[in-house]
Each structure stands twice: as structure tokens, then as C-alpha cells.
Image 1: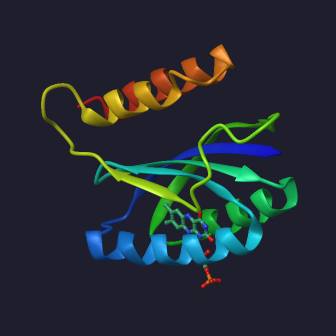
Image 2: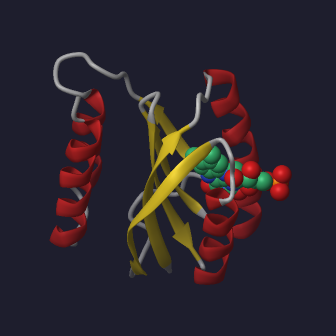
Amino acid sequence: MYQLVYISTAKSVEDAEIERILAQSRRNNQRDEVTGLLLYNGRRFLQALEGPSAAVYRTYERIRADERHRAAVMLSSKMVEQRQFGNWEMACERVNVGGAQSSLIKKVDALVAGLSDPTLRAQFTSYVRLHTAV
Ligand SMILES: Cc1cc2nc3c(=O)[nH]c(=O)nc-3n(C[C@H](O)[C@H](O)[C@H](O)COP(=O)(O)O)c2cc1C
């Protein structure tokens, strides 16, 4: 099982567009046995993709070329024993910007709390802080 995590910057993506992205993702990911999680705070995407390695790479290449976002940075890419982000075709959380501390930070902290790899955990928690700083 392969796992890839990246962060990217949205280019004026409205909520209706997110729905379209999710519809595409769920259709394709089900076909390709790819699962994962997509977090969006109105500005940044953070996505984890898991599945057979060829399928994960193909999906990531497609996503990277998508003009609805830019500057994708891979945070982690490695083999894992089993899926760590659940069995969703693509779960999505829209988190609010601002608020008491960024809720994206809280979401991500909660999300990675269960990950067994401390380096991956630290990458997530520090990267998301860096990229949500005002
Ligand atoms: C932030 C973001 C996340 C995406 N996630 C996925 C995904 O998990 N799976 C997927 O197939 N497409 C995803 N897409 C859409 C792809 O970039 C691409 O538009 C889509 O796979 C094309 O599907 P189609 O060939 O069926 O039209 C994502 C796009 C964006 C902007």
C-alpha cells in the first residue's frame, strides 16, 4: 500500500467547485482503489492519497496538473502496512480560516494524532502551522 501526502494552494476555488472535485475524486478513486482525505481551508489543500502505488502516482500526476490549484508540495510518500486515513473514496473537510487559532491546525493535529510515524506527524503539524500563519 502506498501513501502520498501533499499540500497546495487553491486558485479561487468556490464551494461549488469543491463539490465537483469531490465528485470526480470519488468516481475515479473508487475505480482505482485509492482512498484518502482532503482538507481545505479556503486557501490551502492538504490531501492524503492511499492505494496501490501505480494508482496513487497516476492520481497525483493528474491532480498536480489541475489548474484549480498550484504549488503542490509533496510532504511524504512511502509504503505503509495498511491504510491510515480510513476507507473513504475521498473524505473532505472544509475548515474555517481564522477563528480561535486556525481550525485547520486543530483538524490536522487530530488527524495525525493516530499516525504511527512520528516524522510524518511532525511534518504535518509543522507544515500546516507554517502555511496557515498570517
Ligand atoms: C485539490 C484537488 C484534489 C483532487 N483530488 C482528486 C482525487 O483524489 N482523485 C481524482 O481522481 N481526482 C482528484 N482531483 C481532480 C483531478 O485533478 C482531475 O481533475 C480529475 O481526476 C480528472 O478526472 P476525469 O479524468 O475523470 O475527468 C483533485 C483536484 C484538486 C484540485
